[in-house]
Length: 207
Ligand code: CTP
Ligand code: CA
View 1 (cartoon, protein in one colour):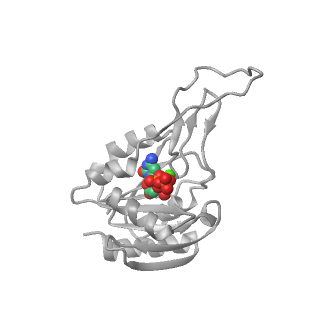
View 2 (cartoon, rainbow, N blue to C red):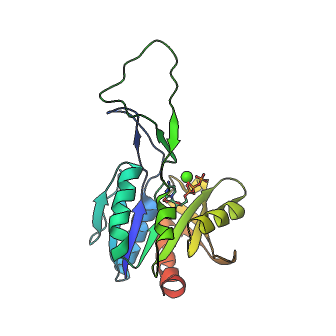
């Protein structure tokens, strides 16, 4: 298969030198890319800024903002068999990006934020025969929130993990199907979880 994988954080710039982002290490997405290549698949990795080596054999599209992630995915998804979306996408961006560098005013300032576009929802809506695997990081009411996302983004399954995974080497995931069944649970190093997830996709998701 030819698999699109999104990984790492996005950044939303306040001015030319400052941005909003999150603590995503990118490890889960990079581990999945490596596992998919080891299993004989072609991988295109759309990656935010992370401190990791690109897996040998992966094609890479480096992005920073959610808009760049969106443009890259819209271009690449049609030529792929499916997508695994591990990217920790910023949900909000400053309404205005200040050109140059903001200077202090001596007063409190208010940063107005607007929602970014939901990349996975947009890809899910145009998936056709392609498969879509989403990730959901939840701190409360995990199953219900993950299922709401699965439906909203038209995922074939969603990988639920808890917030302790965000900058860790390990992960514990539960895979939920569109009929809200737990299809599998994997625990261990992200590299081991990744290999099991690729096998699961080969056997249960890819049609
Ligand atoms: N995602 C995306 N574009 C966004 C936000 C999320 O493509 N703007 C993708 C993520 O890569 C992940 C899935 O959607 O695969 C779920 O992300 P998550 O942050 O858990 O869900 P949200 O829909 O953003 O909801 P919230 O953060 O409010 O819980
Ligand atoms: Ca989010």
